[in-house]
Length: 428
Ligand code: 5AD
Ligand code: SF4
Image (cartoon, rainbow, N blue to C red; front, side, top):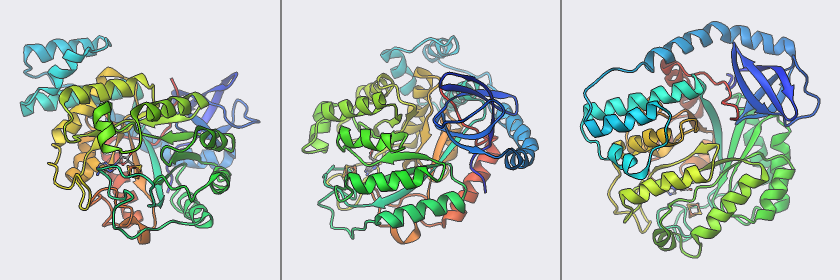
């Protein structure tokens, strides 16, 4: 099982290397010493994470070669545009997209207001076409380990909020490391997201130990540990963490204050900016469908995400969850999430857009629609079965009923049917 195709370094310019995947070139950051032109490497999130021996690389590349060309063909065929009937307004907006011009708020609104299913399917096709134009068939796949469901916060939407009467668990340092090792050795992941509630039992010393050990496995260490101190994030960067997932959740300040008691939007955004400045690969975004959020708020959410210049957009629908103050909120429509993916793809055409488990939870099969509507990245849960149901930030999380192996298999089949390949997306 292999989650990344090796790349060959063909040029080095300062800290940037140009690498080649079967003729496709990408730029990546050199984050290891001693890399030369001609070396074979794995890259994740635009960062070189591991050098691999030539003999090993050639065997893997040989195994991928024909598959890769097939995948490319499938992806190209699925990204063709059909001519179709469109309302005049939407047509004018999409013409701008075609000319690579940025959309303003009212143009974004025009697209969100489309309702005709025929028109929507063309909207998604165009988003998929732009994704293909910008990224080819590259798709990044990260493993996610949910290592603690303790949290000091009380976000209204979240099933593991402090006041939730749930069974808590926390892996100790050695357990996180051994779960990560299993994900790397057995399943072949090259990037691991370490996610938890905001759990201060995990102090600097423990997190440093975890990050160092996992970085030494030759993978991208991706943190998702909440609003911890800047100094802690800096320290973890210094010992090898290179990516960070931190959503601002909503750009509406009043809503933020209400739904995330004791925290402020300004602090959150400042922290996200600081993390980006430290050099982390940044994933950020928001929740769609929080009670009281309007279409203007959603448009502002997309614009705030773009303003933060993330390497990856991460947003998903609110899943109303038992035992939380938002348990009785209405479900968000799948179309609203798909429109958000498409519009995000148009306003930031070379963005990496994650299709989240929450979308698949909304409706089985929606992950495929997200990938066919502008998204190009996903995560697979590799948390051991004994903990997975306890990490219920929301109810009925898709994939929890299946084993890790089955989830991986299903994801690979899905990506194969869509013609996507696990080459790195590079940096721009
Ligand atoms: N529905 C959807 N997403 C949620 N999150 C937390 N609770 C929910 C919910 N009920 C998201 C938040 C957080 C991420 C880890 O999970 O956006 O940043
Ligand atoms: Fe804690 Fe994050 Fe849930 Fe908020 S969303 S309660 S910070 S785990």
